[in-house]
Structure formats: C-alpha cells, structure tokens
Amino acid sequence: MTRTSPFAESLFSRIRLDLACGIGLLTRLPINGLLSARQRAQSGPWPLARSLWCWPLVGGAVGAFTGSMAWGLEALHVAALPAAGLALAAQSALTGAFHEDGLADMADSYGTHARERKLEIMRDSRIGSYGVLALCLSLLVRAGAIAALPAPALVGGLALAGLLSRATLLWLPRLLPPARPDGLARSLSPLPRGAFTVAQSFAFLLAALLMTGLINGASQQPVLPENQPLFWRLAPALALVISAAGLSGWLVARSARKHLAGYTGDVLGAAATVADCLVLAALTILFHN
Image 1 (cartoon, helix red, strand yellow):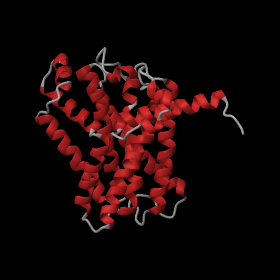
Image 2 (cartoon, rainbow, N blue to C red):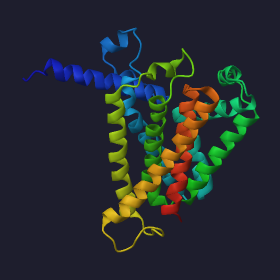
Image 3 (spheres, rainbow, N blue to C red):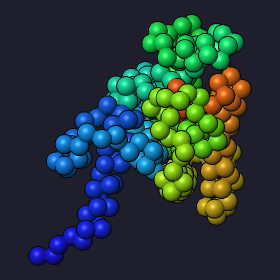
Image 4 (cartoon, rainbow, N blue to C red):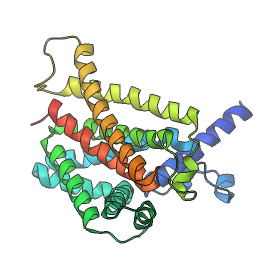
C-alpha cells in the first residue's frame, strides 16, 4: 500500500477547503461533504482570499446548471422566454441571488450624493426603486438573451457567461481599495497575486474551450468569417465576449471609485451581474435563433 506524501495531503486538504469556501460563498449548496473532520472542527476564519482561484470555476458551473435547465425546458416544448425565466429562477435558488443583491444595493445608493450615506444605504436590507429597476433590467436582459440563444448553445453559453462574470469581479479588489475598514470583502485586500493569476488563467483557458465548442456546434454564425480556420473564427468571438466582460468591470469600477472611493461586497456583486448581462448580450451577436 502506498502512502500519500505529507505535501500532497496538505495540498489536497487546501484545495478541498478552498473549494468549500468558494462554493459556500457563491452558492447555497451544502459543503460539509468537502471538508475533513479536522476542517469541520476548526473555528478559525475561512481562507476567502486564497479561495478566489476557484470562483470562476464555480461561476461556470452555476451557468452550466442554468443553461441545462433552460435547454431541458425547451426540450419539453416550453417556449424560450418562459424557459429562460424558470431557469433564472432556479439559478437564484441555487445562488441565493447573491450577486443580484449587490446590484440592487449599489443601484439604491445612487439616490444620494454623500459617500457615507451611500455606504449606509448599501448596508440597509430594504430595497428601493433604483434597486428594483436594476434587478428588473438585469433579469430582462438575461432572460431575453437566453431566449434568443439556440438550444445547443445554452449550456456552453451560460457557462461562459458565469465563468467570465466571476473572473471580472476579481479585478475590482485588484484595482480599487476597500471602501470600508470592515466587512467580508475587506479580507480580499491585498489580493493574493498567485490565486488571482490562477483564477484569470483558468477563466481564459476555459473560455477559449467553451467558445470553441460553441463555434463547432453552431449551425449558424452570422457574423463570424466562413470557410476560415478555427483560430480566425475563435479569436474575434473570444475577443468580443472578453471585451464585454472587461467593459462591465470598467464601468462598475469607475462608478465605485467616483462615488465610494473603493469597492465593497455589493460592488463586486454588481460587477458580476452586469458582466453576466453584457456577455450574454454579446453572445446573441454571435449565435441566435
């Protein structure tokens, strides 16, 4: 019988803990099964910053789940738009509408001008008219995009959007200081370079693989060059969706710097939701019914 080396055992234990942290933060799934008995007995703080390498992976899995729900409902002859709405409802149940809550709170903060008052509003659990409007618009864009995508592109397309949206939110604590001296998101500063690099590398490589699958599986690609090698179709498509994600991150980061002088957890959630919307909208340029 071979014994696992202490280094490999320690590495495996860290990966399990990081995955549990990422899944526990970004979804409502039970995570005790991922933890060892020793880890379950520990009472110390969770390695939130260290776990960020897996956040794009969790986001991609959430997107794949949502796409599978929409595809399955369409296969049962549910119309595209109701199928999209039901799939988004299932996603909200899976994630607890974690990022959407951040979008609503950030939108509500635009009702005042004072920075301190904005931060106070963002901690208020009540939702205002700006927050409701932001949520409605985000659901409208996503549901419309899901309904417009052909069924074979739903799983890969939504996985791609979930992957890039979680990779996008990580740029904000990279570029901005914390807006508060406390809070869960404060623990992301300073952002661990190694985990950040791994997260972005995973996001780029998996985005390229998913886009390759989407291009090869699509029956119609109205804006991509025909009769060209895969690279010349993949490169502009990948550039489009990454640019959409980058634009969303830039817009949210610029607003957070101007109005809050930094980022909060709500700002990160807003960045993820806006990126999800813009990437899905960009995908409808490439693939649509």
